[in-house]
Length: 261
Image 1 (cartoon, helix red, strand yellow):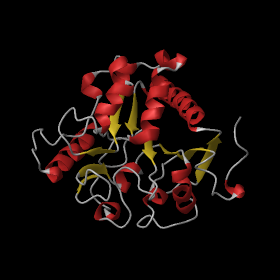
Image 2 (spheres, helix red, strand yellow):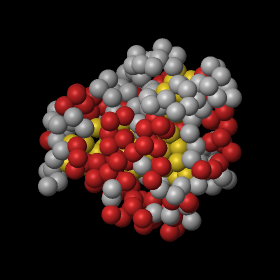
Image 3 (spheres, one colour):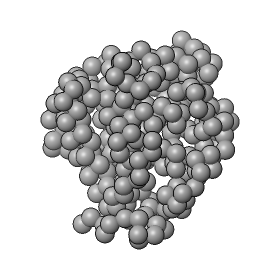
């Protein structure tokens, strides 16, 4: 069942990153208080890394019990371990290396020089197995019920590495797939699919900057998910679009409340 998207519009991308970081801290602390642990799916890109950097400098970051947090990724560039273009490399630099995480609970997607070599489909299948192994009887299928799953929205409406019209966005069974021939470099990637994304309690879509305005308008105007993958990303309990004023500039005013100060 899809949840209707809620929109929060901030004045600029810095404010958006700080507010989203504060929101994420609260969500993690609440989940840990009620269930003992929390699980979050991270996103790369400009907005995802901006949020992590804001979290690293947030005064409340120490409220999180970092040892009881599972981190997953929505997608990854299939490059060698430590490559500066990999989402996990960027996340470590922005936040992860500065907080006391349990390494066993940091679930990075396989690298191209890892145990599966250059076989991106085998790497994707292994990540699907890792997700399935972490899913409990209370979960809805072969992935854990993530507390928060974050996605950056691309100018072409892609989320994770689900690009318009490509096979990965049409996947209805598998939870993780390899992507070949992505229109954005590098062409080979690993990505969660829409069925895995929709297992999350909350899905947060991040969009900041004028180059994201058209994508946000298309995805929020009732477009189909094959043509506009962001339109197909929603959570079980909540779907939240976190935007700055530039990214919201083409949305009809009826869609969102007045901008936060």
